[in-house]
Image 1 (tube, helix red, strand yellow):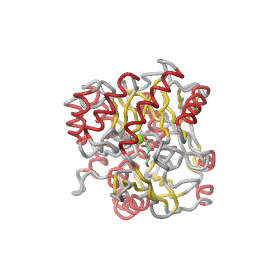
Image 2 (tube, rainbow, N blue to C red):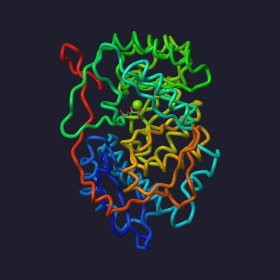
Image 3 (tube, rainbow, N blue to C red):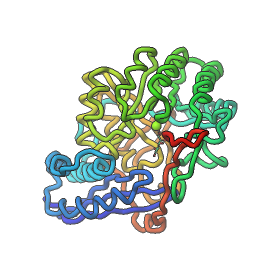
Image 4 (cartoon, rainbow, N blue to C red):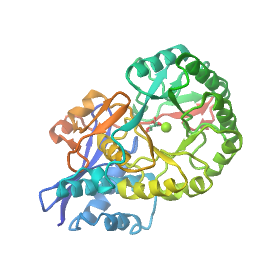
Length: 402
Ligand code: GCO
Ligand code: MG
């Protein structure tokens, strides 16, 4: 069996997505997600100029070998662009294998470990009372697990909160717009928010919160400690991903579970975090984490330390990634939870999906392979438009983490 061709499809149904389609001499093709929010064309160019020419003629059945060809075989290892390109290739190859063997992806990676996939959604409000209302709405929608983000008194606009009643979408057309940030206002407010949520909705709801990399290690330790009484399911990205040792401070002061990794892309990002038991959930998604082949290794490594998965699933990851993640979530033993932020309806004009949400859980059907296809004619109706994530400054103008 041989790879005969491959192409990159860039489209923008509401937001930009990059997809890779790999063709074979058996008439079967595979689909992979290659979307890296705000840097889409870097991955597309890398695939087009360097990876696709090297893929032609290879046997798509040899997934492990092809993975290492693009990882070990490239002197410049790791990095978001590189690992997203490898992920797209890897997903497409697993998709081809499933189609050739006429079986869904989850069967190729161990079969079903569960019947359905627990997901969490987002409740975002511009202030405390709107956020409490949104939590109530998501409970009505059947969710057992809800990520709670709120506007903060004294900060005009912040991460996770939609503008003008539109669905939350952080990437804005053109160059990055600027937000403003004040950690002390946030630290004073966050514990009060969770106290109110618990008072109103009780102990059973699984609550999550994303700090989005904005605390120093000691600030994160204070926050995690003050949130301890509200028993969060997890506190996400309390410190920046680069400073792994920063997580040690949190462990010294709190038992709030920690999730990290949506900006990581290598198993080597986790060696300290796993072996020292500094985290509880792995956030790295298949699309930025080198695909299924690599994430199987990460998940196995995590399982040794009783660490679970909780993959990133924001709307800037395409339906191909979400479907592949759901197969993965179904198959591994140490699955924890999956982020689910539904795509806008317009996205489904381009992507034909094989999953559904019902009462707090997601389900994936038995379509062979990953099971998501792209309607290229529809994709052509939505051409790429440059859009970037915002940047953040402190009130004196100092550049900060967004
Ligand atoms: C999450 C993430 C997203 C990211 C976005 C960046 O937890 O869902 O933090 O909101 O900001 O995916 O592209
Ligand atoms: Mg996050």
